[in-house]
Amino acid sequence: MLSLFLLPAVLLATVVLSGCGGDNSSSESAEAGQSPGDAPSFEPSNRLPYPVTALSHARAAPCPEEMAQVGDACVDRYEAHLIVDQKVHPPSHRPPRETPFKAGAAPNLFPQAYISKTEAADACRRSQKRLCTLAEWLRACKGSQGFLYSYGKEEEKGRCNHGKPHLMMQLFKDKPTIAWTYEDFNDPALNEMPGFLGKSAEYFGCANDYGIFDMVGNLHEWVSDVVDSGLPNRIHLNKALTKKYKENLGFGIFMGGFYSTNHEHGSGCEFITIGHEEKYHDYSTGFRCCQDAQK
Image (cartoon, rainbow, N blue to C red; front, top):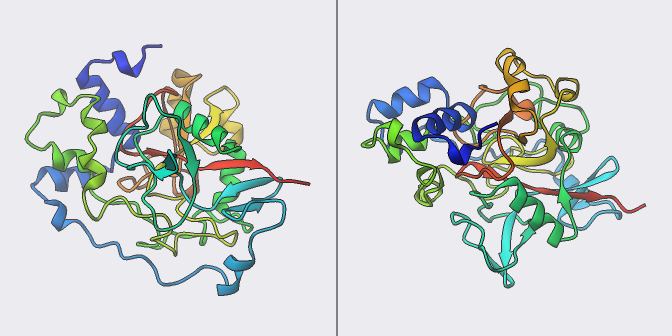
């Protein structure tokens, strides 16, 4: 298969928009001249979907404090940021090439975007963790009750950070889509736009009874699985993905959608993107880490 790094700009734009972008209505509103200031207001919910005491007591002994135990795994409560030389790396910039970086997990920090699966796996490994498997990620997202949206069976607008307008259409509206480049999709200005990317746990209603936040929306999250013939047995694929997943065998997988997606590739915890190589990265790609629970 052709690498995304070798695709012409017009095809690259098509692939990324179909995999990572918002829906048609968002694109149309952006093309109609909607400015970032006109974006819908998504206020964090003031309702916790579990008792107030649950979060402080959710940590089981087999897991570090920043992780929750889900079955036999420990799962980071928050989307990851990067730590470089004991400092938080600017999350709107690519991981450094020469300096080792590791994954951190904490509330009230912007999570790291612009990161590939390969880089995310390295960051987890340097923190004595690993990328979550697809099965672990799904169990963690759905909570102990198996809810589609972590917090419940049905979507509640504004609980999670998704469904916002498509920033590519706004920041590059004077540039034809056929001229968009891979560098454009990695422009730091995209995630520096106020009101789009949220801090970890800012949408604190977007959580489950394990006390894990932001698994729906905010940033896509890489998992360790790759697209293979058994993927439809591990997660429900909508009709469009069922038709084309065989074209993407061997590609990486990221989950949950990001702030500009809706239901294009599934809903809530079952939003899955399967069309990108493991070295791919853009402003929508993030991650969180897992590790085996201590017995």
